[in-house]
Image 1 (tube, rainbow, N blue to C red):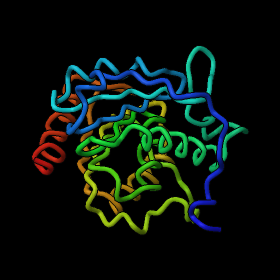
Image 2: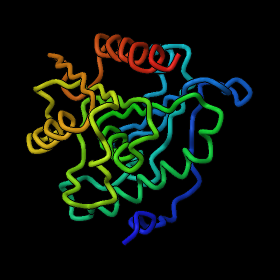
Image 3: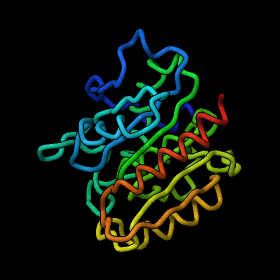
Length: 223
């Protein structure tokens, strides 16, 4: 199967996106894409835009599948509805939207929380050369086995990745942490920071570290 055929063509509704800047203010600037967690929506992470470097244009994308009062990128990994195909459909959804908007930006960086980190890392694994950096907050990477649609062999450890988490996080299970630890160490330029008392969340100290990471790994590198 060719790489082009490795992904399904999902029938999702049109993307819903919150932008930090009007369209006429975006050209030539770096783009930061926010990917929210399970059961949330595009408004959840958008308040971070004011706490991160002002050079970025921030776009917060809503996941395509409804669940309860919010949305999800794919079914929970422990549920009977989960499949790797569902993850790949969501990746295709994100990339199709990105391809429609990324022209004119100086770079693209992905930031995901919880399941959003699973999405951010999966999108990177599908397009290893397309992203300046990835930020993962209280999340994980998907165990894709030997699926060649995830082009891990092309990730040579040069893409900067920030991974912040609390060791007492009650949501992300140990098996996910174990896989993610092995994957990020092998395939990315890793910055890993542990926080106490944060549980499954984000705190001010972490956002300060993310800001420094973006300034050093994206803005300085691409200036």
